[in-house]
Length: 316
Figure 1: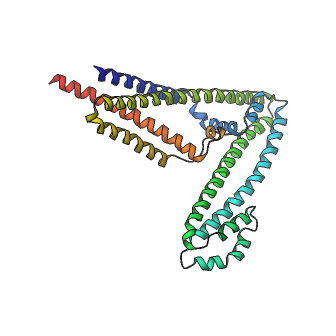
Figure 2 (figure 1 turned 135 degrees about the vertical axis):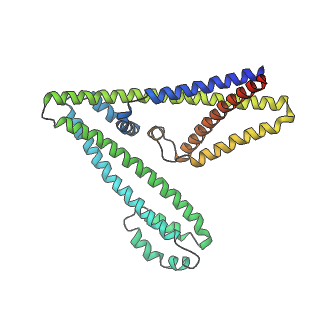
Figure 3 (figure 1 turned 90 degrees about the horizontal axis):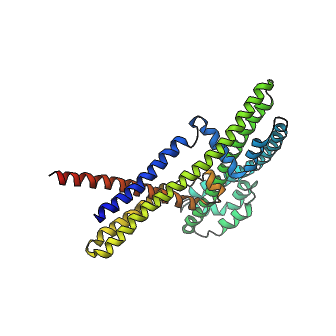
């Protein structure tokens, strides 16, 4: 009887999580406007005031709003080119280092002063790279230095992609505003502007709804996982002979979490960027979510399997 109650509790929590997930997938936002929704979320992650300015603008003030953010995007695009240059220089440098072997290392090191002058001529981190490589005394030391440079390159590339996607999204919104501003028909201009502002407001509501559903799913999922672990530990205390099964279950959760971390993307979402998360922290979140989903799936499958097996036994 006790095990049946436990199964029912876990089953109810799991089903609630599934229902919430399905409800979110159907009602969170219009699928036809998904790209626009994603673009607005990317803008809100960095400059939410831009979305607010377009929402609160009038047809008379729209040109000023467009001019303001056009200038801002031009400035950011100029800075992004500098980041891209630094990224490309570091990529070339890394290829130099990765192509070295025990036979070519000493030659490259001897020619490094001339190579660094040409390679880092436009780099803001020239001295840093020069000092870093000069600190690599032997070929055996090179691997650690390459790993360090790999991490630095990944960070620069990540920031570059985030900024590039943001500028692309912001320009998409600005271009919509320009199309409205330049429309010769006053009535069509008013209609399209009203539609744009309605979309922006609905995207804001959808984002709030999305956050609510995601939070609720995580709470329910973590609740199901907690119940699983709780009853596993309780059974381990009351029935020590079967503790090895409990340990196998806990080991399974650890392995699932590790797999979730390995397959998790380090590319930050707009909400993660807004929260100031690091790539490693975001991978930890991905791993936790992956673990929750797998635990939910295992719980549901095990419950149905138990019900079927009990039905078969009772029939016999």
